[in-house]
Image (cartoon, rainbow, N blue to C red; front, side):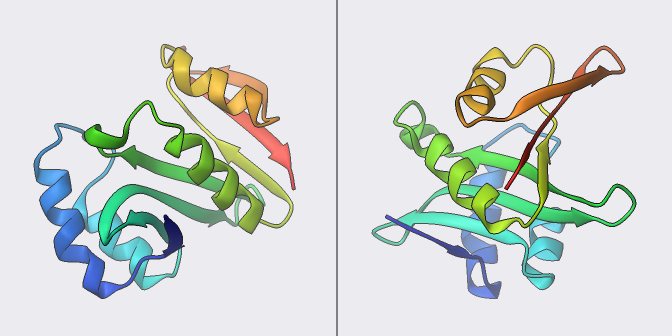
Length: 133
């Protein structure tokens, strides 16, 4: 298993993966932009993409945001999300946050086990979890 910054050669593989999922919070345009700005991480095993996660600096709020986590179906439930979140959060300097939906109990629990704490809930559907690294 390897975690690294994604590059332009990964775009076609990720495009195929995204086409097989019905999710609106990750688009190939997001992925391309994150690759261009060196903020897109991917996890691979035997050249297969296992997971993707972006680490985006927000100048307005002065923190890093982990965004657009996806673990492919065949690798779900095996601890790869934990590894990816932990690895990427350690690349941030200062405050790092994540905003899962309030009804995403699994993600919220995972963030708490990684020492993120809930700062607040907004719009009754999003949580803001944060930790200092």
